[in-house]
Image (cartoon, rainbow, N blue to C red; front, side):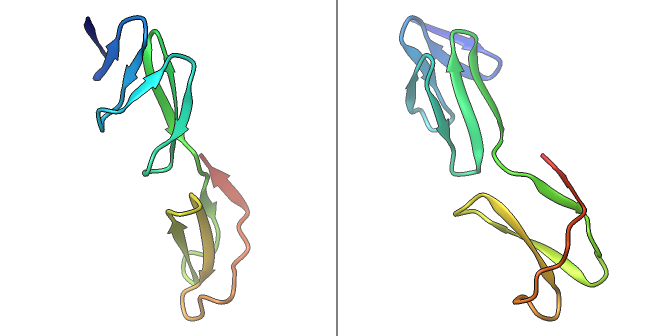
Length: 92
């Protein structure tokens, strides 16, 4: 017995099917390969980003690099990636 809710397929009384067709039990949480933290409920799957993005830093001198393994950003100098730049504001 399948029910489609907001773009996700939910199997009634057992869990939710994610975009990769994996079944998750109601009440379960997981992190996707795209760094999203997801939760399965009877209403469907709810996901949000598992990371914060640097927004207030010297964009002329520095660049932010995303590490998909750790789901984190590192802000470093464009000319020398071994030197970190100060970040004054984050969003996520």
